[in-house]
Image (cartoon, rainbow, N blue to C red; front, side):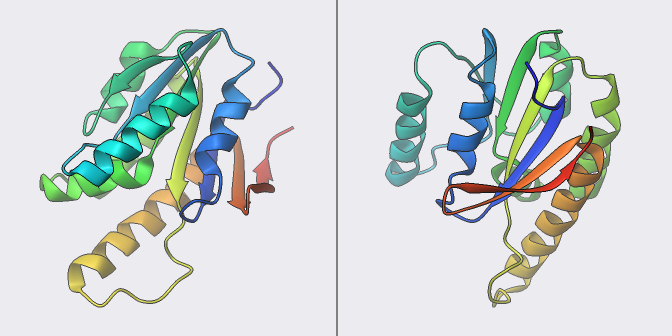
Length: 173
């Protein structure tokens, strides 16, 4: 596989981030999808079901709303690809359970050099729009922006997706 070892794919809602991640992972035989979403309502349950159908049957699945760093360590194996979809929901899960978001993100980024699996992180870019009205919204936006910066620094390759088209922001040769 010629793709980078650790990759971050950023974009807005419905930009094609997840599809890009799945396309890049398709060449691997050993594929694991880490889902961070939790179905708290019917609409989210439908979204999760739609994503599962898009992946197909050749993926192993781990639902991991909180302990992402430990999950990646436990699944680590050369020749394996792990797609984490998505960092944004993971962050919101951490916030709502009163975890230290900054510490968890630092722990995740510090663990990446030790991972042998290829890892593709999917994350939303939320800082391009309006300033959120509420303190919670602004806090989340700030956490998301800092998380994306930290992951971009820790990953070998970073792409921004708009209208299904990738724009390479960073790549290591």
